[in-house]
Length: 436
Image: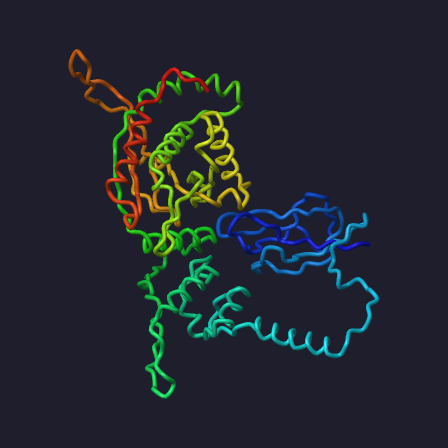
């Protein structure tokens, strides 16, 4: 029987590794083509890895909780159809013996390569990927120095970008004095520990989920990175409320799904970003990256209380029907755990609906590396002053608050306020006669 190497597939931009969370098949089990073999987890989302071929699971190369790099072989499947992807090195070929000087040169290269990728022995339980270890080896970074680098990856893991940022700052530091002068030893200060929490006899201790830990780390990192400022504005959405009530039943019959307010709000945000493109940026050190595409993140609550942010790619290119389809699809797959890693990648601005839980406004934390996030408050019927040519009078209107959190390092109050005001203008100017 032929052997097929099941590899960890590419899972979207910037996803380089995943953690194995569960093997769905055991050695000896029969596997159909496209059948899920194992479950994995990335920093963003959980997913399944299907088999590309039909066969029998012959060997499992990694255990649960192991971290695997994209492209690594994770299992061997025996097939009966002749499909084989085992290493070409296993195929015997007759070759001529190379010259002795060639052999010597190759041996020297092998020795140098082994030295270059020699693992850095960590004095702690902290995990370092082979790429990070290799960079540390090449740049003569000691283990103590490596342990002091702040990681921005999963569970505080040091990433390639962390290493490059550290080396850039390291290179700008003042050159050390000659070796004949004794230098003071600088010891990295340990991170400040949280205040101990007392536990009483009747208290219940609940272990945080893996996703909960990731979210907690991401939120603290965002607050420490960005200078958060908020702007609030109240919006009259009576026209939108009445229009949706008028068309939602026909839409449900025709499309087989519900028409919510979310795609209408997303459309207005995408239009406002086109008017104010400096909201659609990221910060990289002292540089500003102006994003070409408008990819809107849509915060979605999960059944376990956690939050995930699937992304509507190129949202400005969708009409209202396309936006409604995209919103419903991502929301449904988020609730059922069917999101793919790429569905949560590449967001440039995020919208979160705090009104779903009855909140009239909120102060959301920016989803790094973005510089802004908009919170949609609950829609309420309130008494309001209505201006007419015949004079002012009091009427019942449907209103809501928009809360815009933005990074004050690069977005000043004028831009932050003008942007959320433009979103409000698009909503209040909604055409009651439009079709979908």
